[in-house]
Image (cartoon, rainbow over all chains, first blue to last red; front, side, top):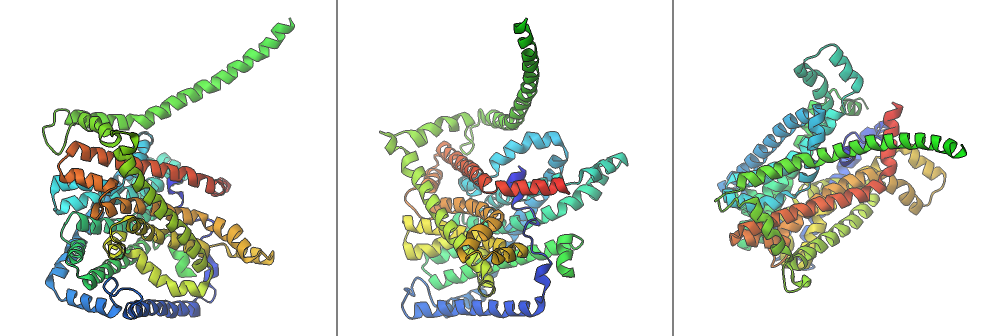
Length: 284
Length: 289
């Protein structure tokens, strides 16, 4: 089991970036911002020039300006904002269910050796089952409703959280655990003061991975099942041949993805302000 | 006399030898029981709960299992079965797309990770591309490539690329500077540094990325066929659903599940060898601390 997680667990021990990065960080960070902006601008220019010169059929890849114009059109329609709200609602609901269920079950299963052994094979078997395999079942059960997409979202992100929490609970220092026991900490006190702080970095990793996966499955469900949201708008734009609009929506999903990643990272940073992996960065 | 002398230690030895197997034999039985216990309970619960189900959406498990064989493995000849016609081609596209993603991802990742200005130039763009949910690339690539095999392979490759690429970049970037300086001091050539320092050093991260990429690739294999295709596993499953062939549909879901489990098992066996040194290193670190 630990093997399935080893690579994901953070911080990665052998080549974690150490204090070396600190040397001369300020001017280099400056350069990184500058170069990064240049990279984005270069990409936009290439995407503008390539279709305009006819290297790529502009019907398939409209120039950047056209995509941006379509995006500007879109954001002025109320249906866009309703769809964005739907997508975010499905995403956040699914993620919340997964995180709560994953943390509670992970802590319970992780703390009871019998449960851990008895569920290991089942978890290992169910986890790799692709959540999109459930699409037909979800459609039969709930049609195009939000529950159908939620099923996919929860199934996909739940395992991410659960597996991380299980790894986190197992990471509890045995000496600390024995100490807590000999001081007759109650189960709840042990969870609160020992298991939770140890597992929190893992929970945050699970949350970050789960958040990204949940967004993927939210959009997938909207595209394939027809649950209202950005993904559905995208599928409609494709069917009606509104190519620039389609690209604009792809850009929106990308921005949404970036926002989700940044949010998850910020949350991780905030929740783990006391953890060496975070404090090290600040101190350096 | 000599015979007795000879047998005495031999039996003692046999006794001790037997004692250990007996304990491990019990250990094996125990772990097998643990491994199959819950799955059996769950299957039994499913079986019982649906035994006389009249609901068209929840057919009895016995019916699903009975349709599994005929659905996938019946035909005039083996080559005519759905397994060969739909499942194997899907699997083939998955593997080709995944292989392209691996080669491109690791190749570009090493390059971008090793050349700092290049990395700083590319990082925001790559982060953006990674953040795009891969399924939205299906309609985009359909414009260029239609709904044929190349579109599906491409969708898988472009979706699986980002986790591999970004993890490789991260792995190469995070290499221990002492190791880098050592390789330089020993005048490793460029290729020597890639092969003996960067690839092994970044392999834990690369494997992490490859694992995420594999599950994304499976998702994309399925949905590229559900979205637009005339054949393939994903198409078959959706077809069953649309024609309300519910037991067949369930058998397709099970087939997909089994494929996912099989692929993740193969992946684990393959990467266990690549990362044997790393797990040993982690163990020694833990033991040493």
